[in-house]
Structures are given as structure tokens and as C-alpha cells.
Image 1 (cartoon, rainbow, N blue to C red):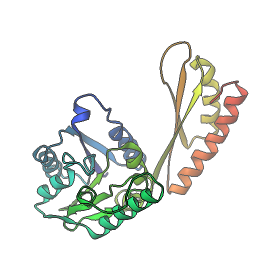
Image 2 (image 1 turned 180 degrees about the horizontal axis):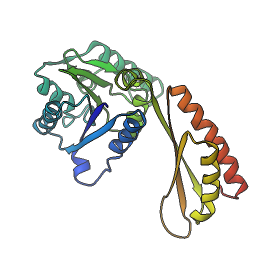
Image 3 (image 1 turned 90 degrees about the vertical axis):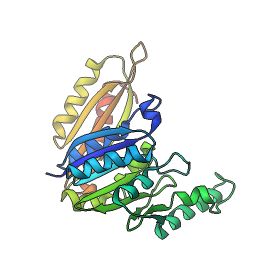
Image 4 (image 1 turned 30 degrees about the vertical axis):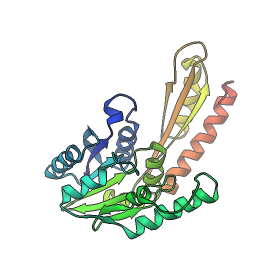
Length: 266
């Protein structure tokens, strides 16, 4: 079994300002692909703190180590510097990463979302990676992810923004995950429905779950009170990403029909 460890980086998490949803998501991905997460750490935005946990993960022989956060352009984004220190490597501008960052800012400039697409020191910082690392495209944000092999382990450094992390895991990182875990892919989708009575929701969920045993369906209240909304998570593991997506789509379509028939809106 593939052993995975997660290191989440960010003072904002430790201060309780931001909830660590990334580790929760990665645990579901790893479980769905047949691996196991055996350790999660949350550390401050400090090189020594990050490197200490990474060295501990390497000593425990983790097959795959995810870091979450600390890839941005500000001075407190120190994850890749810590990875380089852990592996005793220099931190250099990665040519592929530089191209990815520059291309993204040029796109943002054309869309009018930033004033200029030109590279500057802050943007170039996001392209500095440990020597020998591979840059992984970020389909949503500007900071590329990074893959570095250290001894028998792989360190994958992901951005901390959940939408960016998820887009990388479910997109460009799929080949690596297939190599590490073997055949298998995990996908999930979430919908929100207007319903103040979970007992009214239960028959629709039961019906869809019975018709689609390859998916997992779970409802959770978004808040309590008169106008309660429920979040419904649909997830599936399969031998390929396309197969998992197909399972999800079929189950979602049936769920929407079942909800409408029960008079529940989304």
C-alpha cells in the first residue's frame, strides 16, 4: 500500500483564520486510489518548521508527500525554499515554471485582470524551484506545482488555494498519481439543495445510491435553522478518470430527477 503524508503550511491555518480543507480532500483522493494517509502536519510559514516535518516524513519512508500552500509571490511563501533545504539542493529559476507563470500573467493581462503581463521579481519567485524539480501546470492560478524525487519518496508541492489544488490533482497530476498508485482515479462533485428536513431528502439519496453502487453519496447540513440547505457530496473511484467522471455524471443526473420528483430545489 502506498503511504502518503501531508504537510499543510500556513500561519492562517494555525491561527484559525482558514480551515484546512485541502488535507481532507487529499485524504479522500488517496483513499479512493487505494493508498493511505498516515500522517498530517500543519506548520508555520517558516523554512525550518517546514523542513523539519519534511525530513521526518522522509525518515518514515513516505512514498508520497504532499505539501499544501506557500507557493505564491510573497515573502512568507517559503515552501519550495524549505523543500530545497530538506533535499540539500539549490533553489533556481525553473525554465518550465517561468514559462508557465509568464504565460498565465499574459493571459490575465489580455483579460484585463492585471495591469501588465510582464515578469517581475515577485512573479519570478513563483518559478524558483529546487534544482531537478519538475514544474506542474496550475490550470486555475498562477503558481505552478512542483514535483521532486528525494531518495525513494516524491514530494509534490501544491498551492494552498483549494480550487487550484483540486484542479491540479484532477488534471495535470493524474499521470503521476496513476504511476504511484497504479490504475485508479477518484472524482467528486458537490451540489447544494434547499431542504429543511433531511428525512425528506433521504429517500431520494437512497434511491440513487441503490441504482449507482459505484458511487458514494452523503448529505450534510450547511447550517441550522428555518432555511436549511444541504450539501450533497457524490464521489466515485474507478480505473480511469473518464470512468469516474461517467459514474458521477450518471448518478448526478438521476439525483437531480429524484430531487425534483421529491419537490426539492437546488
